[in-house]
Every structure is written in C-alpha cells, then in structure tokens.
Length: 279
Image (cartoon, rainbow, N blue to C red; front, side, top):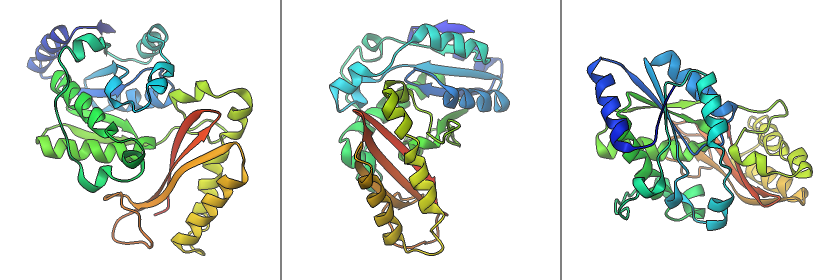
C-alpha cells in the first residue's frame, strides 16, 4: 500500500494510473476505521482496479468543537487495517494543506438539507460537500463508496455530483452491524460500558417499529418509536423521522418512492444515528 500525505503527490500518481487505464474506487473516511469501512474497501476492490482510501477529520463539518476534539484518531492502526485488507493508496493530508486558504465554496441543497441532520447541524453539509468535492477533484474516482447509515449524507453527495456535473458514480452500501444489532460507528468506542450495553436498543426499537408497518399508520409508528426512546432514561432523542427515500421529506403515508426511518439519539454524551427501511 502506498501512503501519500501531499495533494500534489496524489494528483501526479492518480494521473499516472489514469493514463494506464486503471479504474479507481474511492472510500473517503475520517479514520478510526472499523468493519463498516472495510466492507466499503472490499466492495471497491471488487469493482475497480485501484482502491484509494482517504483519512481526514474534516474540521469544517463539525458544529461542535468538543466533538471535533474528541473524534477518535489512530492513523497507525488505520494504516495497518487498510493494508491488511488490500487498499492500494492511503491519502492522509494535513488540514493545513487541505485548507491552506479559507474555504469559500458554498453549496445549496434546498429541502434536502433542511431536515434531520441538516436542521440539527447548520452548515454541516456545506462542510461535507466542500471536502468531498475537493477529494473527488484530487482522486478522480470512477466510483465512490458510502455507508447507508449516513443516509442523508449520501443524498446530499448525489445532489452535489449532479450540481457539479461530476462523472463519479456514488455507490451506497449496506449498514454493517455488531452481532447485537448496533450500527458500527467510529463513535462507538467513546461509549462507556453501561451505555454500550444499552446502545443496541436503538436498532431494536427501529426494527420492532418496522414489523408494525402493516398494522399501524406512519403517525402511530412515529409515536411508538418516540415513546420507546422516552421510556429509556439514558437516551435523549434528537429526532426520529419517517421520510421519502429520495426527497428526504417527512411523509404520512407511502408514496411512489421508498420509505426510511432516520434517528439521532444521545447516549452517555455520544451522538448516534441509525436508519431503518420500511418500504
């Protein structure tokens, strides 16, 4: 595996690979890699000649400075894991180079960014779009791979690609879970023992609500989920929404598109998100 820290070195190497006719699969990450990330690497390996993974904790997408400071980092462990799983290139730039000048790009995603994560974290998706668009410019991938746990983020990135007329194919990949059902996340390592025992109830509640879809209305399902989280004092529910899987707008009944439930909760000072598909 080749490790690259500087943008100019990366772009020169990518240009060489492109001239060789190689296809490139790209997995952008913020590090603290886990089985979910590795599943993306494996998918990218199946579908491309070269796999590039970036590790960069993007400061401009954090609304909470404390969350940025506490975000887990272990580049040595990440590097070993990537090499063991067949990654070809690790790109790990420094923020001082990525943002040598103040980022002035501005993206607008309309209704897509006015709900759920966008509503709770103003400016978050502009920060995501800035770094992903820059990474796409440098890596020039044929395909980029993202986990469906960040369901809204995928919709935002697809819209960014449309706006920029970018040739990158966005490939959503299934959520990877622990045996107990907890969606694997880099933030899980911050959970204390008691919180970690409770955390799988997030998926349990969503999954149970999905089993009720043939007998309850969407409003009844939403009430059930909210009440279930309220019953567990350790949880602080930030939002639960049942949304159209294309527009991401809250809906009260099934339409032409699919339906997903998206949740964000606080547990022991750690913010966790999850997604359940209803239709």
